[in-house]
Amino acid sequence: MKSFRIFCIIAATALLLPAQDHWVATWATAELLARAPALAPPASGNAAQSVNTRGFNNQTVRMIARTSIAGQRVRVKLANAFGAAPATLGAAHIALREKDSAIVPATDRTLTFNGRPGVTIGPGAVILSDPVDLTIPALSDVAVSLFFPGETGPPTNHATALHNSYISTGDATAKAVIEDATVTQSYYYLAAIDVMAPAEAFLIVTYGDSITDGARSSNEGNHSWPALLAARLAAKKETADIGVGNMGIGGNRVLRDGAGSSALARFDRDVLSQSGVKWVMLLEAINDIGHADTSTGESVEAADLIAGYQQLIERAHTHGLKIIGCTLTPYGGAGYQREHGEAVREAVNQWIRTGGAFDAVVDFEKATRDADDPKKLRADFDPGDHLHPNDAGYQAMADAIDLAVFTKRK
Image (cartoon, rainbow, N blue to C red; front, side):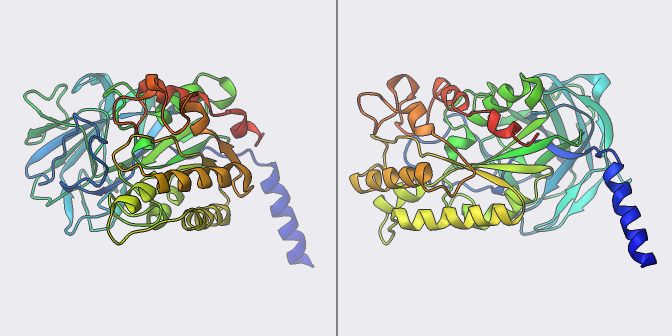
């Protein structure tokens, strides 16, 4: 009886304690192994995209990440998710970006790892930096600079950064500007940036393929639909503590590996492991449909994709997350569009809308389809590949999301 009374006192005390600040990702990206082949249909990627597939050797890479929520204490997550060999990091810095490769010098902070300036990231390993004090505004550009003193081999990366990365020889992590840099548009080993946030803050993971990744949006423009969603959230007091992590991978599929691991295979790493995650927005399957229709030996039906969705829904719910189903946008005229695939897309969208399995639904098809030919994107949203929206189309997608869905928690 005495033990029970003590337990009750402890439980009651816990209920009276104020909720604690916690780590929430202000930015995150999905990783894969850098390699040349792309599995998306012709003209489906970012024309300016450039990837360093060889890795680093006595080189610094400075990468630019766009934050979603603000914070005054920060840590960086590095990952060697797909590397075959350890990658040794010699030095790392974080700062606010001023312009291009230039940082705001007064904001420059040295990152350490268990008190040391460098760390070796083993194959498949994830490493968190020690926290540092740094005021990071919402919707700001942060520069993370990593120096690799030796050969890394092909790097774990994200190929569509939509921001420039700057590569130079030697340790340039503390330099205010990286002169004569080789410029790419990829992230390397950088998986997430977390901020210490209020107890009520949380993360939305946007999970999908190149349409979520932001293909065909303006480089350095922050015009993917997840970035535009983050801007909408930041503009309202009641949603300003909600972060967005973009886990789109160009060419990705629900059921099969290809451009990155399948959505089913990468869910634990790219969704469940994210700091502060509470919601997932799922927009994926168009590549499953298109490749099945144009590849020998592949087939996919609506029932197959729905079964995949049900698995993701169940796994999200098992871990206490809510999941939003997003209807597949039109792709009439795209390189891999076929009549059978269109029927599959329409059946999948009907199930998303009416199946009742998702916690909420966002109708991206309705937001982007042509009124006269609903199998196609609106002409003013189509950059020419008939698959990915342009900046205006991505804005329409972000505007179609009811932000009140995320505040019903209060």
